[in-house]
Length: 479
Ligand SMILES: NC(=O)c1ccc[n+]([C@@H]2O[C@H](COP(=O)([O-])OP(=O)(O)OC[C@H]3O[C@@H](n4cnc5c(N)ncnc54)[C@H](OP(=O)(O)O)[C@@H]3O)[C@@H](O)[C@H]2O)c1
Picture 1: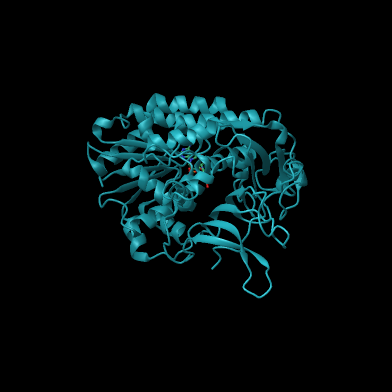
Picture 2: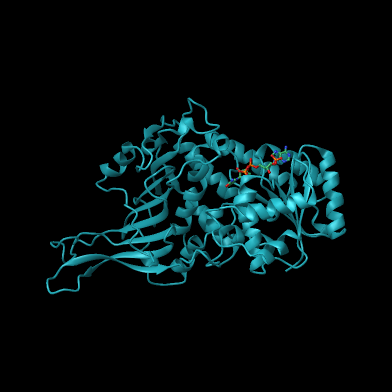
């Protein structure tokens, strides 16, 4: 692995504290960073060298629900010894002169660079301009890559503008648009499960599938991120990206090869074939949301959404797809559930549970795994049925590095230049095109009680078809 310098714009922010610094710690622990790596973190306030070191140590030792394993002092010290701080305003050209000097001091003339934008989108243009002015995006000096987080815009027009801006300063090969769901182990395993095995793939067809449900429910609120969240809402914050990407991975055709181009091409085909059904969209807002910090007291921002769509391809046409997500819901659970049709001649229909359908569940979190809901006979003299789960489960050992965190995985991919689990401009465009059409005449959010499954109106569309929302089970992969 080549040495490189990682520049994190926004090292004092929430993303850096909760995700990036812990991921760099894990990468240090697992020897996934080259020996010669240098990391420069930037923000506005001045900090002395020791203050910065204490800050990083403090971040690592802080309670973090995304990073629960203990911090070893020697590993933390190894990481901290490679980290440097540079203060300044990102809209000040003098800051980039300082950055250039620092970069040359650390890595000399020839250098590989990764810029991580952990700061506000309003600053992107000035950052790109200054990077170009300082000739820091010139591959002749080594590779230069840019990692950029969601949201890529607020709608199709603004995302197009941002993508154009990115492409003015960088080539598509240099841009790593990150949707951290694509870095989740359980998401990546969907591809192996589907295309590494021969048994299930033929069943992924409208002849056999009754409906598909995708859900990302959180049992907590917006934390301290009211300012950002209130300008986005749930549908744009997670519906446009995470949930559509989940659907794309679970339903895409087999790529010709396991390459970035081929996988992205297949995801894109699904995203482009989604039919927006604006009449099915229900938005909700949890009771008490408007009292949250930095939220407008009369805010009509949605914290919940539910809608129906259809994948308009010969393979899936006619299969209803139901999608829902939101905050302050009954359970923290993210999953894709594919319910299969019951054959008309199914035996045991007359028994209790005899008509329970088979459901294939990709559980992304918690109780990560891939599970098939089946009927089995109860082990007793009477012939009674039971609902059981055939399951592949991930290790649940929270105290160790059981499997890679998505940020570790995606940072590691970016270091290796592998864009397979990053989004290209076309995917972002297709997602926004769909969301814009779906939310064209956005309904007013309905207030729902925290701890519920959202407004009851969210059930109307699905109930009209004689179906219901899949109750997320915790009976599997539960050690
Ligand atoms: N937080 C998450 O979990 C999360 C998840 C997905 C995507 N994102 C995206 O990641 C980005 C960062 O989000 P965040 O939640 O980390 O935001 P944040 O907590 O508000 O942090 C913003 C960072 O940018 C720095 N900054 C702001 N204005 C600056 C300026 N003019 N010059 C120099 N530095 C400046 C801040 O430093 P100082 O204020 O200390 O100077 C801080 O380090 C956003 O685009 C967000 O949408 C965040």
